[in-house]
Image (cartoon, rainbow, N blue to C red):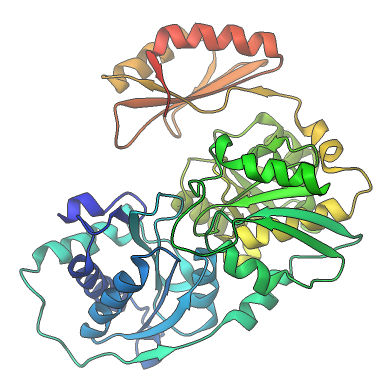
Length: 459
């Protein structure tokens, strides 16, 4: 069963089958055992570090799953700090605000309502993924035939950290002129944190839709799908807002649209924010995922920063941001990472930073972003391919005269165009991202590559 629950970066599946309260109890127990065992020596003598922070999102199954998870943690002799219903980014703040050995958020992010799961972090909110502990936690779960005999039961502490979290997020917001912003909360956790953090902020007017937390979704809480942005686009145009933002279900990601309701790709937002952060951090590293437009590297270097290209995934992004002492990072998926947020991602902070940049300029958002749209991209296109490795080898042979690397799949680069093809971990799919200097060249190369890779699928 647990092989169906544990993924590369988190635990996630449908509720109540195969993810249910019994599985949640065992995952809580196993996570507590693993994280408590790995408390660094300098903190091992302090009983306050033998604690785990637990939060949950708004899904109907989250209270029951979080309760079972908490019972499992406490049965392992570890104290729980329960911070209630929160956006996922708040767990990273909480882990750094209280003494503990890590934290768990009960969430399935942008998935439909029947899904749920757990995002696990270690000390200082370092991600626990397949290579950094999830496999060990899964192994502990699989070794349990029933519930182990409880150790000395851990305590349960209820804690409200919203005041500190609000102050932390608002450190990133500096409005220099009034702004009117349209928000789509996707019936998710933005419906809680936006009013608590941003309502009544001076010079900030908010118009909103889908802020009600009902346990169901008016549209799928995944803003990467263009269709899910239609209500936001209509709200921007009907209210005359300066900007629109749509958050995903657990509100750690966001997608922006300009005042003309045009969708702003996340790599373009990364390019804009890179320049913003480098103004006060000359020469610092900025990390970006390898699917991003070339404009990201160009803008980082134009601003005097060090461009660091990384493979896709929050575990890689956070690790590299920390190791390179970077100031900021961004992924095409809408995750934005901040040095001053414990190298973690935050939808709330990304929102605050984009507002700060916009308010410092007199032009509308469309004009601010226009110079950054100098490359033409395909977006991510999926191809059904039975032998993925053979297909990648054929591409390497066909484009042998290019600059090629294998950081994540294969990236092939020429002066006027480039592409990346990477494998899906779970399906017989290759994912193509292609970019060119002109629209005509983009179309030509997309036709050329499509014939070589396989059958495009809508996914």
